[in-house]
Image 1 (cartoon, rainbow, N blue to C red):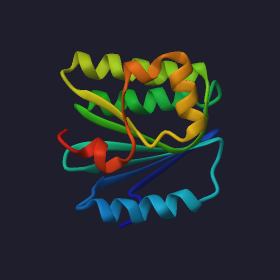
Image 2 (spheres, one colour):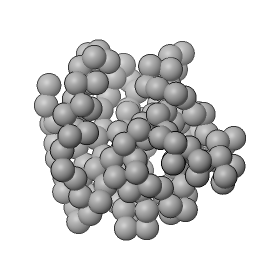
Image 3 (tube, rainbow, N blue to C red):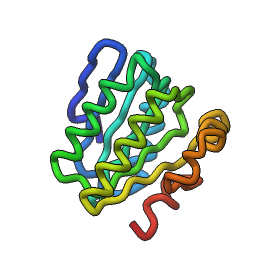
Image 4 (cartoon, rainbow, N blue to C red):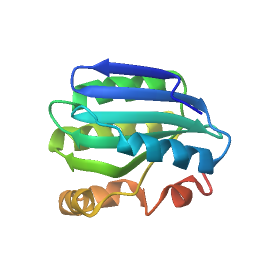
Length: 150
């Protein structure tokens, strides 16, 4: 399985994959994605069993937040109601990045959907804890846990 659509816009690279049949296929694609050289931020969007999974790599900050927010809003406008942000490869998140995630949570809840976060690395987890965002988001240790009972 390969990336169906790839958009490079300034400091953000966005790859999209249509429906993925199983989580092992997704893990293989993520492994390849994690080894690619990226711009400031890369985002892989995959769909599995009606859930959109966003795999971030790089820095979600003032330079990249607007492009990511536009991308996520486009997904939500298409009717996505189950969304998972996998933050394992996210090196850094600023207040602008936190604002994008918070806005996503508010929009998706308003549409009777759910937004979950998984795999925050220790640095990102610390930012979530200090800012109190760990109490706002549903945070899971891995993708399997985030996908369970969705």
